[in-house]
Image (cartoon, rainbow, N blue to C red):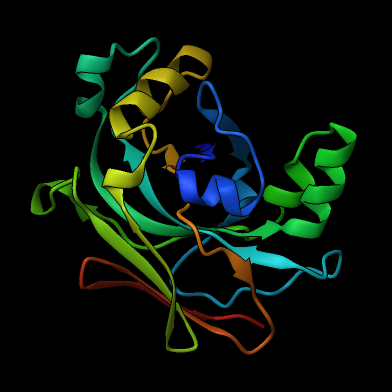
Length: 202
Ligand code: MG
């Protein structure tokens, strides 16, 4: 199983980090050791003083795909979850400035929170709202209408480079509003009005 992540997929988030709008999807991968599930607490790693939450919709691949044509890409997933792409922003900024890979900032242990999955047939994927609350206050709100690349484009493009396998996860990008977490924070995420995860930061 691999965890594929799409970066810079929401315009307002690109602007808040002073990045350029990419010409094609930005892709990185987290190892399976990054997974954090079942509302387990997240422990801030010692190597960072600025770990950020990034709330993202996550899809699960249901069949093997390589060079998936765009028109068939919607057949490759049927479940959706909400996740957090935890990012050591200070480490990432250092690596970006040096032109180095992001893995230490993005792929560390438990940096990929994923909720349980729901069938997509109960949602309108072209107009799907999701949000993150920190300590009872909404800090990020997104809608799939704001995505630069929709789910089908992400699957098709990713599968040109990486064979997609059954059970792979794809994080599909974060909307604006990313920010730091501190010990004691309480994070709760929703897709529409369904509570998807609810856990503590330690
Ligand atoms: Mg992200």
